[in-house]
Image 1 (cartoon, helix red, strand yellow):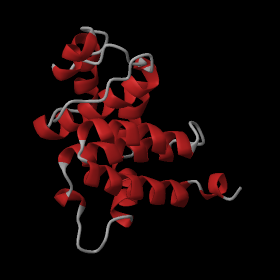
Image 2: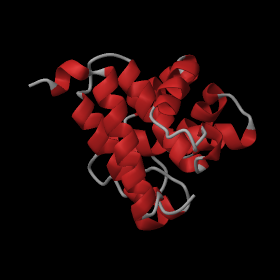
Image 3: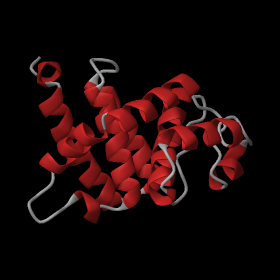
Length: 162
């Protein structure tokens, strides 16, 4: 994974950065999201300071309850989240073909969008686009934007009817 964004003063963004990292790690190692969450809370969240901490995979400032909520939702709603992501991909693309970091990011976002009305869909899109810009190149970030926007409109149409 490349250098994550620096959520200085933004603990909710930090929670989302950590969630994407944890979902990536869970997929790569085969460990459960619960196991990875415990590892992150013990060793990565709140550890270190400054840019060096982020480069070492630390997330100094992260809202732990939100981090845990995202991981739990991603684990318990994984089939629903994957179905929502697949529905937004072209016929030529499969979920498995996506970059694993992008896949983790989209799963975290889908889990939040599927979990209710909070936070607002536009907040979810903006937060995960910030995370995407830290991990992914510009073209992949634009792709993520398209998938996030389509997913949010499909899952929460009332929020866009105004």
